[in-house]
Image (tube, rainbow, N blue to C red; front, side, top):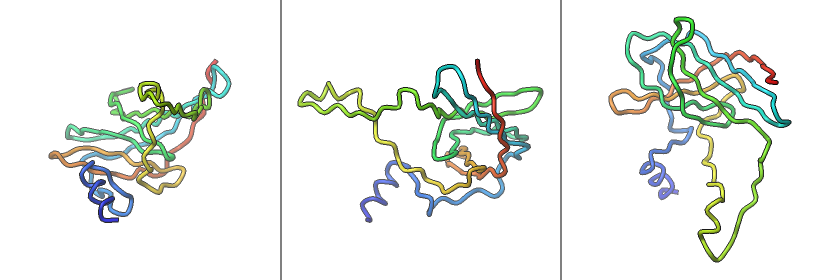
Length: 153
């Protein structure tokens, strides 16, 4: 068990028991919306999480954790509002978990890497955003995310 903790520490990974949420981040969340986009081919869908925030300082946002998925984030502005956006693929199209096992390891290159365990226990309307300040990663829990649904042609 100690070996696992050492490996997590060396790789910079965290477990939910050891993660402490920042209670005074250098930003304030104004609103958070999960936009569920459905359309195109059958089974094609994604969730775009848009978080409006204010801050007097430059914030280096890194990742969003939402509904057992994580993604990198993008920052920008929309209608004079600062935004952090992350897109989560929820499609069931081409969702095959077939493994290629072969004596020639080059044939196994198309195998999907194993997914790491989701580090947080969150309610359906909660997310966690990570950001870096002074070379240290912090985590902030976002609650009360509103849902919207958009159908794409």
